[in-house]
Image (tube, rainbow, N blue to C red; front, side, top):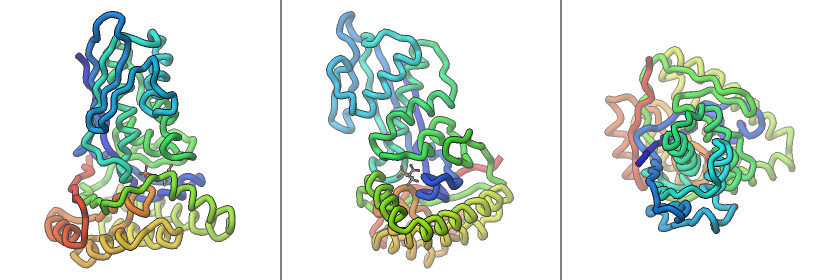
Length: 311
Ligand code: PMV
């Protein structure tokens, strides 16, 4: 039996603009994980995939190619020159909330690729895991930038520009973050499509917003690397204002962001596709409990505290 895991992720700054070639910053969230476990099935049974959290089971031989996990499974088997339908029972588990901006789909796919690689004893480098996962991301996203698969496959904080190798970097101070779920499911495909329609209708205005987000991401990278937390908080909040202008925030997210700031967060913004899903608040170990309480009181469905460690 072989198991492998992959983390959830958050985008710290730069979502949406990253689809248009601007830089974004993302980090893994190891507090939530997807896990794939492969065990031998009886000879001739072929490969089955069980996802009890989703209430789904697929037989590889007959499963729909449009199913993202099945798609990535077939790609991984081909990539590793393995038989197309091995006698395996694969179980997928995840503690990452679905459709909430934490990269659950990419993490499931990455865990699956890693489990196959470990099971057959053929190492797959992070860049190849990322590529295989990317191929399944388009089912969730339409036109994904590639940031989710990249940060999840590499498992470290990254500076990301579409179609370029990611640049891993390390914070100069621990980043303590609260990730609050608005409880509203928000498929990324929808908000990415809305932004695209806006951009097509008024490219000049949207390009200017994307440039502003790029400048904030650049400043944020420096703030993270030097441990300038108050500055980083301010940049989060400025990024949120532009996301609001882009139309990807929502009253529920705005309420959570306002509550976090009023309770002492250094800054707060939505994270990921927006509209629903998660927001993030930059806090300190001293303010985390008060801010978490304020988020619960303002309707957060769940609040997760995570630390992106300095080195
Ligand atoms: O909703 P998420 O966390 O998967 O993030 C989407 C990030 C976007 O920039 C909105 C889309 C993308 O492909 O980068």
